[in-house]
Image (cartoon, rainbow, N blue to C red; front, side, top):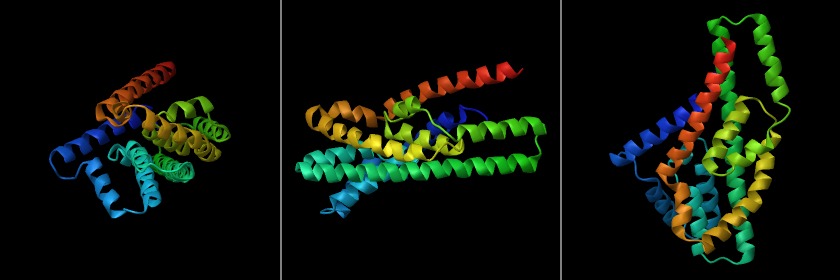
Length: 234
């Protein structure tokens, strides 16, 4: 993206629009929708867990569904055996990985459309600057940052935006599979934490104000990066 801050700004706008639509009763609350899914998929918990995690792991859609907490809570309330926990964890990882694949290719698609628009508009960049930008994109496609991946995995919504950005920057697709492997111990720990810690602590991760606070910090960092980038060019 031309500005780093556009992505967090669009995330805040998305949360605001969804909150307004829910307040005006135009769309049902995400938790109410999940309760309906629970009744519709009664007796098919594996399919339900997969759909819930997939829905929350898709960029922007995840702001509507508090799926990660709901899915883990379903698992704990079902009091599964250890073998069931393993299969349910695999369903969660599969859902999150499918979401990462979707987000990655959405980012790639966005970048392709943006590049096509820039070429059609004939912006003021010289051929040498364009060539340099293409070379930088090609070099960045070879690797990804493990540090930033681990930070993004703090919450499923932040991972969604991270994967979107990886696709936009044409980074290596192996980041998607690596995130899936890291999700295996993550979801096992999440189930264990839900069963041992209080419900209120984990609900914090699905709280709208908490999400807004995290995105606001992200926005401030991006605004600083935009300022630093453009002040160095002028």
